[in-house]
Length: 328
Ligand code: ATP
Image (cartoon, rainbow, N blue to C red; front, side, top):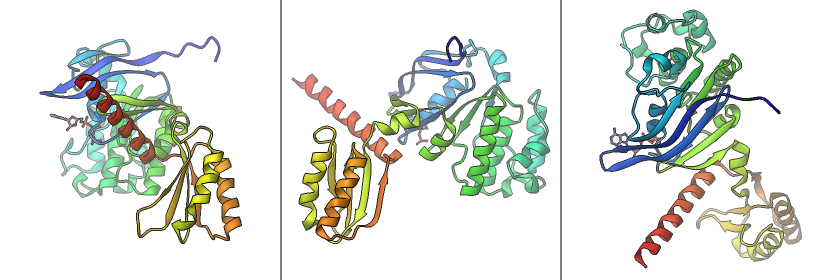
């Protein structure tokens, strides 16, 4: 990539948004480059939608600066709106209009919009073209939202939870469509609740928690910061102490590998580890030595839940440390 300059299409600096006393976005810096897909993930109420609305120019930040193609998207709509595709949320259209009529209406108000029937076919909605929007299932409605946002082949596409409520097959279709939009040159910012979706689509992810960016990078980078886990079921926890010793020896750094037992009543053991290969070997040797049958043995990288749990717990420790420092 030596010597290749990639243009920054969106640049947000120090963005803050308050709703009355509540500060929902608390100082976000974000740059989105030409041709990339950035996925915004977050805990509940983290500020994803608020941030997206600011980037789309639907809401002015309380303070900070946003540039989209060099312009403030809230103030300079004429310069920014034609380049943007925004995924509409529920309630944007009359339910009595059919799917095709809705897409045609949307096409009429969006200069440069493409062929309606081809777009419906691409998202597997062609057989529903004559059905009133109000009769669509949640998943079909979601797919129509993606069709409408992408109809004019915008340079920058904002998708708010594009696959929430879709079944696995429709989700795969949506991923294919999003991938082909990017291949055609679109830059995409999406929010999602699924790490798998971010993994499939996004070049970079940004994880929000309480209005700030708690983690950012490629999915692999963010996942690698948290410990992997080895899970299995075994009949009794009484035999675990030797395993604890083995795992501690394999740990890359002290206290990084721990053996956790699931709550009473279940017999699942979880080894959280920064050295999965060594610890898996420890587990297997330990089981062999003690004649233990490991049921449902799995070794997996950190899940989104693990990442969120780490984000929440480090934010909590930081807040406690700050409160303590203030009190003393
Ligand atoms: P979720 O994933 O749960 O949809 P989110 O990350 O999209 O959440 P936002 O919808 O941006 O988060 O909301 C951030 C915070 O601001 C939340 O605490 C929410 O309750 C609050 N909030 C959002 N919109 C308003 C509003 N119009 N007035 C007051 N508070 C609001």
